[in-house]
Amino acid sequence: MNGRKFTWIFLLLVIILITGVFGYMILLHVDALDALYMTVITISTVGYGEVAVMNDAAKLFSIFIIFAGLSAVGYGVSSLVSFFFEGELRVAWRKKRMNSKIQELENHYIVCGAGDVGRTVIKNLQESGGGFVVIEENEKRVEELEQAGILTVHGNATSEDALQKAGIERAKGIVCTLPTDSENVFTVLTAREMNEGIYIVSKAVEPSAHNKLKKAGADNTISPNEIGGQRIAALLLRPSVISFLDVITRAGDVTLDLEEVVISPASVLAGKKLSEAKIPEQTGLIVLALKRKDNAKFKFNPRSNEVIREGDTMVVLGTGEQVDMLETLVNP
Image (tube, rainbow, N blue to C red; front, side, top):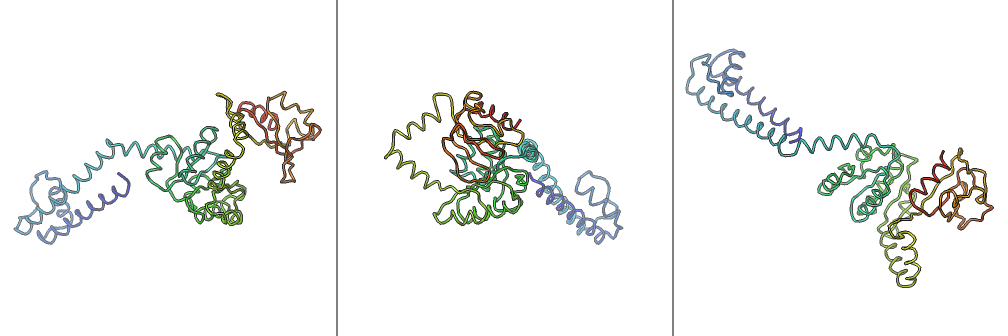
């Protein structure tokens, strides 16, 4: 039972009480205190004596007050029992605990929408172990996510209120996977306004939506339909290449991931050549590409004499443990 239902029950009892006081004052010609006393003993059916001689009208009025009072009290008691013993207290406690956990998150990710694409994003974020929050409007999906232990905000991702509850001011990135391009554009606009530095990735449904989303503030856009089509075509035209990529990203029980690592000012690698850094020897990672701080283009398969600079981004291939080892070198 929610707070609104409690409020209505309380207001109903107050109305019955006020009606009883004024009714007895008029019918029995007594003062307010005696009328209140009559109303209370009538509702509670304790059986004390009346404060005045009861006429027929007062008797009929008392019958009405008894039925109305007992009905309101009975409904309130049954609702209270339901609240404690039918799981609603547990749900309320779980929501409160979940909201507390969301408020503690920092540098987390926000997933807007738990549809087909959103669920895939959620699964990958779970596997990565990073903190994230899901904003979902569908009540059934929200219940499923909460039962799975996923931090969830029940609301419309296009609203500032839902984004604020998800901690967008403290978030590192946000993924917009809502059903329509208009919803995603509005969410991107709102998110960029609330956090200028957040990294935004959005799903694009229509081919023309990419430019609109980027103008709205998205850093990157993805079309699941386009990617799915490209994957199917690649499997037809270059099956061996795709099989090879599947093998290197899932070799037996070991999952290899492509990760990007940014060189911090305090990194021991800053100012060194790749040959001097000896990243493969120290971590076991393969350096696939290098992107300069002031350049948007990647240098694939960089030469050994390339100098690693502060703010550069390295794209590496390896296990999560190996990436963690590199993180300790670039962010001591």
